[in-house]
Length: 208
Image (tube, rainbow, N blue to C red):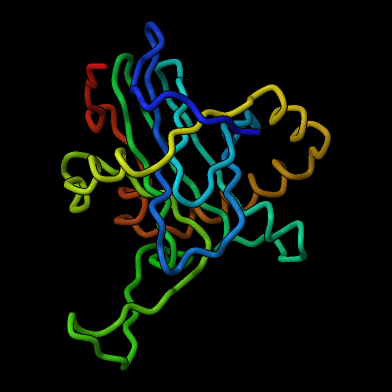
């Protein structure tokens, strides 16, 4: 339900663009992430090493993500495995979101370190293997990595018609994950809510 697109960040007239980035990570759980709005609109599927681009009308949105493949093979849906993001977007601006693996517990970011020591210091332990959706803005510590990710990650766009049909054939999917997402949002700390929210000023104007 996705296709590769030309790696040129163009805006549809009057729209905002939201780009979901999946940089490879040692803590990722495999499979792929389904992304929808809280209201049940299919946004797309994203996999390791890709970036999903979607155009949005200016406004306010709530997004949900979960690992469909893991659930298909028996993993029970849960609060801690349901990612959430709130976004307020303006026209002609591009906004970026990173899928973070192994960095968040249910209430937000958490660091755990092993006793194994390398030349660069202790190894980070994975907290959770499923994704959190984390804002990437010019103020973010990882912003300097953006251009590298844009160069390396394969740009994809969703086949929204097929994806929407898939969701409508399984109406419990959105209903279940919406309830879990609402519970997750309530459990986030103030700092986590900030990191899982996009403000209008977080966007940048990209010239093709």
